Image (cartoon, rainbow, N blue to C red):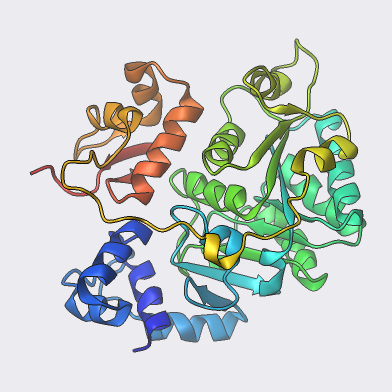
Length: 359
């Protein structure tokens, strides 16, 4: 087993993410040594982990597996907290490292929102930017189509294994993205279907790959607001397109602008907001995680507030938002941070539970 194969193996397990693997490697000296010492070699789908079979499937499907120690792993994502251990890439791996703006929004977009997303995608592509989105219906799909019309590169991040593509309606669009020099990417192993727990995880990658995130159209209760909240936490530029004050589909964007997001009217506004974001972060600027003082709290005050309401049985994010009196987008973002730190896991039904019982 090589170091990169150990990364693939750990990514196939349920209980080891970036934070946990970092601790294991600090303890044992390498990913291979950590894997050899790790007792719970159980795959997410059940049964023993078979990393060699995963590599065979990648070859079968024409997918490149890129681990966190591979040269092709995008630096912007690597420099972000909670960067996935592994990326499964169909298409050009280099597309993930191009200067990028993420365009996101509701699946139930209006004609107004769809036309704007397509226009922003095309104009950003012509300006030399890659367009990142989630390959969902609505705003995401139009942003990807616009980038293709602008003869640029676009990257679709999906919330399932690449062999379980979702949504089916956008499969042809995904093929076109790959054919025209872009990429479709997932951090999920083969065989993983999309569900409510995978989309917030997907949103983290969308936000982390981009210099800025542009919300085109979304209601107040929307996965788009999870993406923009994650983007803000990562230090990305958050932008939003205003809409009619009486439109439900513009309520989320108007709320973002009220909270400080950059108001965007056209592509020039986007380019002004992202500024010199064409520059990639230098290698030596990657954040390091210092050794934790035993007396230092393992999570922030807001994360601690959530943890007081989370148990082994699980609780819905909606219920958490009511209990802690925070916006659902903020609760979703905090839940993602707790997952990345190895404290909670996502369950079906938009719920989270403790990863391991409290001691």
